Structure formats: structure tokens, C-alpha cells
Length: 118
Image (cartoon, rainbow, N blue to C red; front, side, top):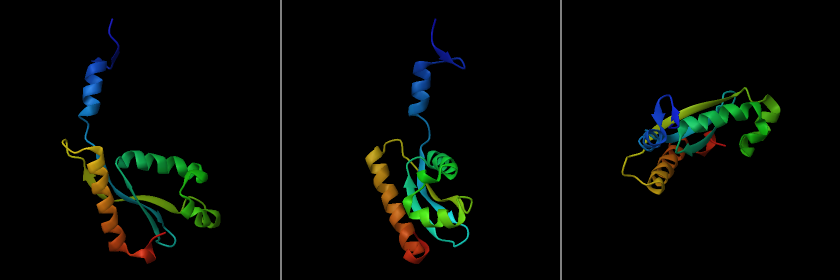
């Protein structure tokens, strides 16, 4: 008897995981009252969004830079906003992908300017 999930063997599941499309990018946690943003990067944007959703119910899990505004207004004023997506190339290493994300984050920081950022 083989271990299967929805009719797939472990090897098929492993291969599907390796071949999945990896989408990273730059995103902002935006204060909808002040317009200020905390810019961040992630190799997995969906995972970053899931962490943000979890953190809204657990404010201590949110970035410390946001705490003054959280104490004043609560977590409902914050929104998750993807600013730019970047697909990981099949031949790209994790380190190369992270470096590309760093560059993309720097471009967005320059574009938005320090006044709009936390």
C-alpha cells in the first residue's frame, strides 16, 4: 500500500512542490489613516499576507515600528498591499532571488521617499 494524498504518491507531491511557481515581491503594510507605509520584501507573498492576517488578531506579532499607531487606532487601520511581484526563475538560487528582492525594495524606498515610510 502506498501513501497517497488525493491519489498522488509522495514522489509526485515532492516533484509538484519543487516545480511550483514561486512569487515574491515588495509589499506594504499601509496605515489607511495616515497613509504611511512599512515596506517589506518576501520570497513568498502569499505567506507574507497570511502572516499579516494572523498578526492583525495578535498585534504583538506585527512590526514594532507600527506599535504607536496600533495603540492609538488598533490593527483595523492597517492593510496589506502588494506593490510589485517578482517571479523566481527556475535557474535562480534562493540567494540570487533574495538579492533581486533587495534591489526591488530599494527602488520602492527611493520611489516613495522617507516621509511616506515608517
